[in-house]
Structure formats: C-alpha cells, structure tokens
Length: 432
Image (cartoon, rainbow, N blue to C red):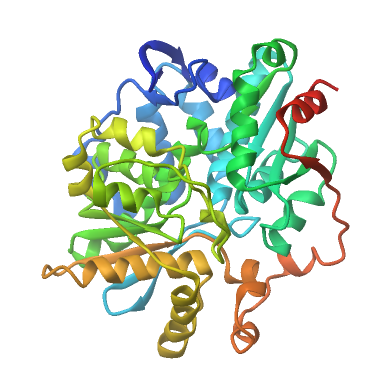
C-alpha cells in the first residue's frame, strides 16, 4: 500500500511511514494512491460474513504488499472484539450502534485497530514512539483504552478544559501508566492546532519520535469503514437503497464511509449531520469553505470549526463541488432541537439516543423527507447515551441505563496536567 500527501501527490510513502508520521511534512493528509474495488462476489455473500471477516477482506485489498494475510488476521482478531448492530427504530429507520466496545463509543474501532497495527510495526522495528492525540470527547478515552500498556508506546492526550463530559474525562484521565492527559485552556481546535504544530516543528521531531492517533492518521480511518460494510450485510435483505446519516465533527467517520463507497459498497447517499459548528453545511450551500472558531454544544464530540478530513473528501471527489453535492447533503441542528428530539423519539419509540445520535437521526429524517424513493435510512449512533447523561433534561435522565463500564469510573481519581494554550509550553513539556 502506498499513500500520497494531499498537498503534494509526488510525496509518496508506504503504510508504515504514513501510520507513524501521521501527517506529511507539508501539512497535508495521507491518502491511498489507489483505492481498490472489492470483487462483486464479496458483496454477493456479504450477509454471511462476520464483521471480522469483512474487515479482513477490506484490509487484504488495501494492504497489498504491506502486511501478510496472517498478520492482518491477527491484528483484526485482537482489535475488533465487538459488534456493530443495526437496530430497528421505526418504519424504515435503523440505528447503527457503534458503542459496544470497551469505551462505549465508535472511536474504539479506530483506536484499537491502530494500536494493534502500530504494535505490529514496532515489533519489527524494536523502537519506541510517542503518540499525540487531540480529543473533543470520545477519541481520548478510546485511544487511552486501546493503547493502554502497549509496549513501546507512550500516549499524550490533549483535551479542552471543561468541554468534555464527566464520563469522557474520567475515561482519559484515570488510566495512568503510559497514558498522560493534558487539560488545555482552550477549545478542541486549539488542541488540534497544538498537535499539528508539533508535527511540523523540525526541532521537536528530530528529538522526539512522534505520531498521531486522531482521524488525521490513516490507520484510524480505515477501520471506521468496517461497520458500513457490516450494516449493509445486515440490511441487504431489505432490498432498498441505503442512506447513511453521520453525526460529523472532524469528518473522519463520513470520510471512511466514502472510502467504502469507492471500494464498491452500495451507498445511495450520505448526510453530514452537524450541530452549530456548520462549516461543512455552509460549504455545501455556498461552494466556499470558510473555517471558523468552534462553539460548545451538547454534542461536544462534534464541536469542530475546521474539520481536518474535509481535504480528504475533496480528494475523493477530485475537488469537484458539484460531485460532492451529489454524494452528500448537510444539515445543522441546535441544542434545543437536539434535546427535544431525544425526548420525542424516546416517548414515541422507546429508543434512547445520545446527543450525537440524535443529530444523526434529525439529519436523516430531514433528507428522507425530501425524497420520494423508497429508501432505508441508517444513522450512526456513535456513543452510548449514558456517556452524556449530564446533558439530558431532568425528566430524561432516569431513562438512561448506566453501564458498569461507566459506573466503575465514579470512584477513580482524575489525573491531568493543566496547560495554557501555548505551543512553546507544550513543546517544552514534550522535550522533557
């Protein structure tokens, strides 16, 4: 597998270099030079395959020349130990539940896969690495869990102080060992900028072996495609075109679905459902991409004002605005609408959603209401409702069942290092 920089197609690296560097030196993002098409026979029998078997076939096609089939199988068996059920909510609407991993969020797919992939390469290099990751919520906990006590890997997680939920904060600040949490006085965009700046600082990178675990890293993106295939396998029998609505922040999740589509997955349409951070929606409306500072919302994992993976979406569709608009629609919803929808959907169907899933549901319904065709709608339910119990209105909180994985966190002590939003301070910390 070869990958190129979105800022320079002549800058080409192998999978191992792309995974460990995270970002190209020109501040682009890595993309595969070739996105292979899976054979029709794969889709003809996909309903008989487990998510692990699906993941193996996807990686086998992508990783040609990089990893042996036996090693791919081992990586997947260690990383993907949970499922992604497509649960019927009402009528033609399904929730793709992505919170059945250890940290109860979809980020478990990417983080655990990436940890195993890095461990595989490190085993061959006999080397150590320091991973930097910015989080707006669930990424931090998933990365902390996925990389916890992984030999040769130290992890530094940057998160915006006061802007993640209590359970999210506990998940990323209570493990210790090789996991360090930095509580940054700023927004997620500030955290992300610190990480990106670190990778572009030649003085720092010459002294410290750095890599990233955000969705800017291709190793995070690839496993996020697995559950699109898995949902199709579950819903293929319905015989109707599928629309996917993705609650979107940094746009890695929707980008992974688009890569799956390029590899042959039948997708009728994508919907980018966002909160008040509507940079991408405004792009679809105007044709101009204008990043802006992020604002805090109930669906905090989506509080991103400058989605990194926008450049990858541009690459997938050859930077043709009309083609992008044909493949994806976008809608924005405020907190009040989101809260009201959680209550209304629960009262009508008995199905409980977290704020991110609710935004995904709202976007899906808005799109389907514009269509006359008989479609199956799938919204990605990216985190367990219990992770956001503090955001629910009082009458809804008792409806949320708290899993043991979260209740066990209550008695654990938060350990974080508070840091101002200053790259020189951050750099000094890394050098020490």
